[in-house]
Length: 122
Image 1 (cartoon, rainbow, N blue to C red):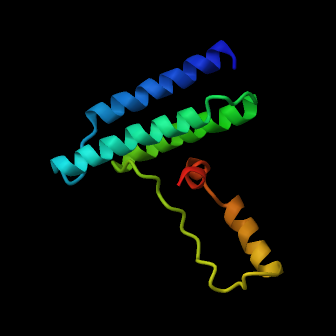
Image 2: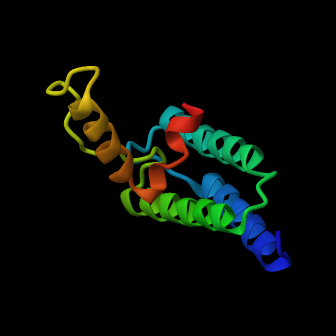
């Protein structure tokens, strides 16, 4: 990891903790605010620990972009949880065959940048 990339990653980490410190839930209830703050902190710790040994610059850049996107979306909508993708459930395709494989491929390709690591940790 280059020193510039390291500074950017550490800056994002600090930014997330500053956001968590000032976070207010939409409902303005104390228990919701505490729960959301804790979610932000736990999510950041989990993902940063999981990705701390990455060495490929392209993968590191993708993780940085995902982090920035999740922070911006969270601040914009005032919701710390990742927004779900809206794809139809796999009710039409059978559990085997080409239709299922095609639907799986489309689902993977259509996943937004801010949800790339969400399925890996949940």
